[in-house]
Amino acid sequence: MNKILFILSASVFFSCNSSEESVDQPQPPNIIFIMADDMGYGDLGCYGQQVIQTPHIDQLATEGMRFTQCYAGSTVCAPSRSVLMTGQHTGHTTVRGNMSKTGGVPPEGRVPLNEEDVTVAEVLKEAAYVTGMTGKWGLGEAGTSGLPNLQGFDEWFGYLNQRHAHEYYPPYLWNNQDSVILEGNQDGKQEQYSHDLFTEFALDFIEKYRDTTFFLYLPYTIPHDKYQIPDLGIYADEDWEEDAKVHAAMITRMDADIGKIMALLKETGIDNNTIVFFCSDNGAAQRWDGRFDSSGPLRGHKRDMYEGGIRTPMIVRYPGKVAANTTSELLWYFPDVLPTLADLANVQAPPQIDGVSVLPTLFGEPQDFSDRFLYWEFYEQGFQQAVRWGKWKGVKLAPGQPWELYDLSADLAEENNLADQHPDIIEHIEEYVQNNRTESPHWPTSTETSTANL
Image 1: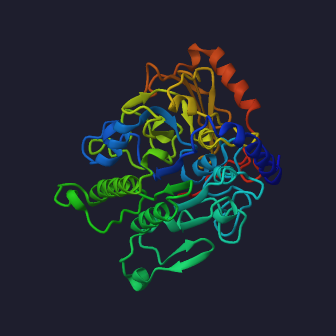
Image 2: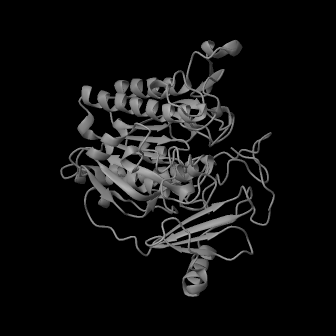
Image 3: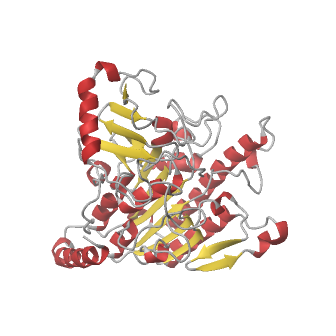
């Protein structure tokens, strides 16, 4: 089903169901989805961090539900965001890597979302949400079909290009389809810190649309390198390497800004009708072993198909609806965000997605995903695949190599490969993978060329 047919069918669904459900269904909530960039599973106090201070995010966990087995869409930026936006895993979604192996937009080979892709923002537009975004997009260059305004966002401000987003004092940012010169960053000056500008946009957006129903997508660039920050805050006097100080200061700065957002929700009286999600787009870029232990007990980091590359913190807060101070071990991942938000908005999700709504779990109802497969593929170092099935985790590092198999219930660090002991499990994984992915013209699996990526 193409985008136009989905929008028409969703409109009919919404109009036919809204009147009969309005008596029983509460008003759909405002939705704020906050995502850090390259923040590890262990970088938050509520996930075991002992050094970096994150009191406001930890408070989200105290007031909401903390997930211990939630996964990002990929182990790097662009495909993870494509999965989040489309509800399709990396074996189906349009953007499967930061840069393509063939084709794409010159000179870097970036692949934009297609015109026919249906994003979570477009789904929520069918429920009359005002949609806004600020931060890093990564799913379409200027002049392509992947621009945020062409993919369901009424307003947006930030970076289109991932590499441009490495710079926290950029010479310009995008405001809708216009570039905005940042005068404070011209001629080598560093006066306008992009992260702070994103927070300002978010606060202004909430204030502006407080009397509507809104969706705010806030993909911050912190703590992605390069390591830049106006000041080191409480870490200035620590006896650490400079990058470590900046890494910690970045996360604590983001935490303080999330505190500002939560305070504004209370000030405007919309706190109780706003659901807030917080996560990271992939695993930690650096493990910081012995300093921060950013991957926690997990093996690997960003660009790995092991747990440290794809498992993300996920916190969901919705006063009176999501039970406070709860922890869930439900297995879910970024494809599930779109159908979950569609459920919240009481609108139809598009067909042919890989996600499943986790709203029952959020609202305290049991869900059993023990027999469900989660799937990832990755192209930066050849063609790699990973599968999660119940307690089992399969990893395949290259075509022609055997699957590795780990029992995560007993081996969270993925140290003991059990593939030889369970050929039946490997056979079942292979059968699933063969039947649940499609080839991409931009990332052919026969191409083994490695690409320099973000």
